[in-house]
Length: 200
Image (cartoon, rainbow, N blue to C red; front, side, top):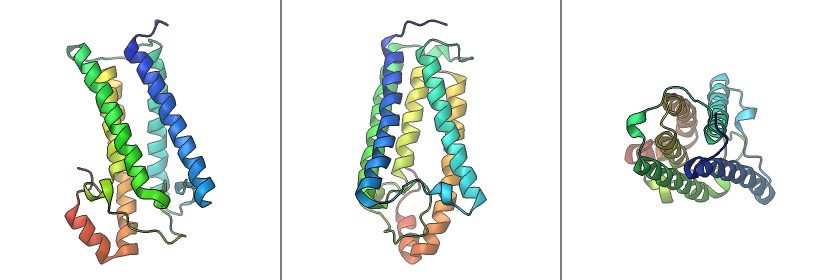
């Protein structure tokens, strides 16, 4: 274990701070602007939906812990030394920034219809413009892109395992959301689903 951080470790620590602050501010400002608490999965009557979101939250918390450990030089187990090049680190950072921007712009496209979980109470609109014309789940795509970038910087088996679990968690979340959207919007959503990919 070493306490001296290189520039890539420092970047990941700052990235984590920015990511967390962004979500806290996003949720707070959203609540202040629209009077809606966006954390809807906590109200869910569906055990599968709640479980899916709790797995997702657990993975994101695990990422935070792993990033902090990596930044401070803790041993994270098996690493892929064949990827240990500066251009891999730089590529990872570029991919992380790109994924973050995709997530932010997708949130902007959602406007007042952004939720974490299914809102069965309010009259929501099916968002199909902007990044949603390319992917049905661009926010999730943005986060998965960031996770892939994190793997390229950390290069550990643990980061691969977290990436796989993250993708599986998003698949579970999307499964519940698609069932709800088909029921709520019917043919409108089915046509959208037919023309736009689930992820990419």
